[in-house]
Length: 419
Image (cartoon, rainbow, N blue to C red; front, side, top):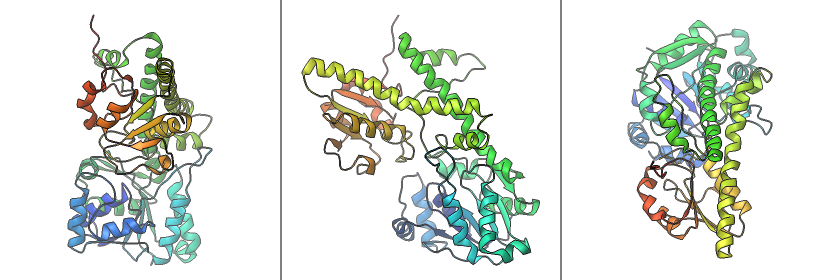
């Protein structure tokens, strides 16, 4: 266990806030830090600024018990957990500016023996870079050499974060054995899974490998779906049959790959070893190309509608999130496809459907021909239905789409073929 009694969590997003709430729920005094005042105000009111099952209950209880507070300022604490975004630049190289900014913000508060953990998914060497930034601000601490640095990547599934934070195994990389053991002690306050110790760069690379493995396998499924379209084969039936082999487990195709991990992390490996990461690069390129392939399918349907009716079609985009039953729009191929259709189909009405958000995302605002509507209204009005996310709310609506042109990227409404 740990002697740490206070923790500052920098970044109250989809990982930082659940981590803060879990730690507070296990008796530690936690202070969350975020640059967004709206997020800070929500947390201090005991509410959450995004959808994640059970998170509101954890946050509400921790705030009411005085164990969780939030502000835009970084406090003094025994340990710091940095959970800020790690996007990439236009050339796909990693953007470490958020990590560096977090390091600069916490450095003045350090006394010399704190544990500083980077949870953000990062390229190899990012934790060392954060340590270097901190030591640049505090050369006195660099000389003393008493700070403990660790990298502890999360490996949770949106929609199940509050469960998987507790039950999943955890990888802990340390700048030293003492740092790794200190971080392990902190995570043992709530983690029931096995905690595996290694060095910093191996821990950073482990998370990237996990997501790149999935990306490569999704790319296989996505490429297969494009091949099957040309050969008039039902890709979902094909995959179901192939998966009856005891050593085959083909994943499901979709409109692309989204989220803050799988769509981003493989590029960190490609950037770190560009000549060697050939399969990983190819998988990324296949998955990044799938949204345009979907749009091309819609364009073909739109041509048919225009030929038959003499007008531009009404297009319904069902789903904007990057995966089912959540409101997370980060790197969402569904949202990108909808936005691209809105830019290209200027003569059409685009009906955006996302049951988990209350207003149009920023990328779709300011377009007079784009509306956020209910699933039922969209299906009734549309000539073309593009099913982009297999939300549970869409499962029972297939009968409403009879006679409509359908592009089903998830196979949720697919017809069972009869011999």
